[in-house]
Length: 125
Image 1 (spheres, one colour):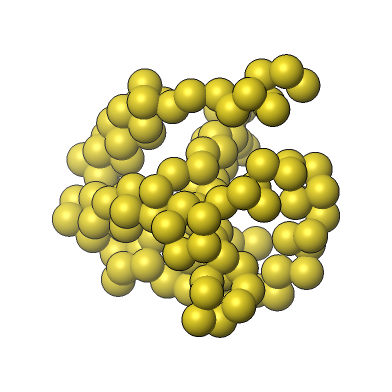
Image 2 (image 1 turned 45 degrees about the horizontal axis):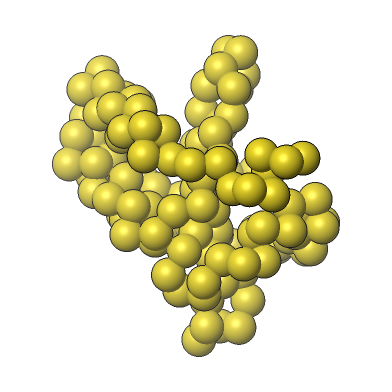
């Protein structure tokens, strides 16, 4: 239910809860959706409980999922999430972002995937 099928989730120490943001041309926009299902997500993905509050985030990219492109999920330093926000702000044009912005987002995720490792828990599952 996040408008662009791309978001990041992290534990906020000041708020003492999980928060969700999505990147937009206006910057990181907090989703005001209720996150009651977060406990269910944690049950299915216990590694998420190990994320360092205010430092690490779950970055979700489901932009291409409706076109058969597999969704991507990463635990990343929160700085990477804000880097993605910067890419969108820098390259956004028109109503849908424009070709250059989507090319830069793809490049961002290609580079992220190249740096990624599979956690031992997931590799052994």
